[in-house]
Length: 189
Image 1 (spheres, one colour):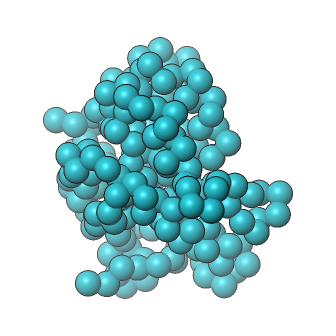
Image 2 (cartoon, rainbow, N blue to C red; image 1 turned 30 degrees about the horizontal axis):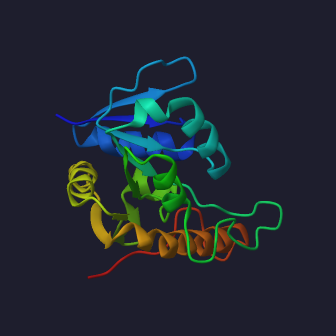
């Protein structure tokens, strides 16, 4: 059985944990006092600026694990752009910082409410997953699907840039109240 460790217990961390637990996955929440990370998959459900500190403090504990970056690297001072290179992504930067981990990008195009309800309007919630390790993507997709939502392989880790752009657009629309926090972009086949 797969165990997922979640660093971050805010809205997203709680929603992801609930979704995965619904599918029978063992979920543990990691706080600063936790010394060991036992999960096969580690979800970093934190704001983008927290990634550097997690890498500095826990890189050795993340070695060999599937590490899921859910962040959207927004410039919160202007809310008008991303803080990563135009041809890069937060997930690619994280993969460079954690060369012994299998880094994936996922959940950043979902709002917590759509993970909890498992729907966006009348459509099923879909989690888009990008990464370079096919086995890691399949493992994450299996626990996401078991939780009751769709999982779609969005391609290599290079696609994280597009996922972060889509997440950025969705967040700016919600902040401007053009869509609700229970809405978002559904994926129809």
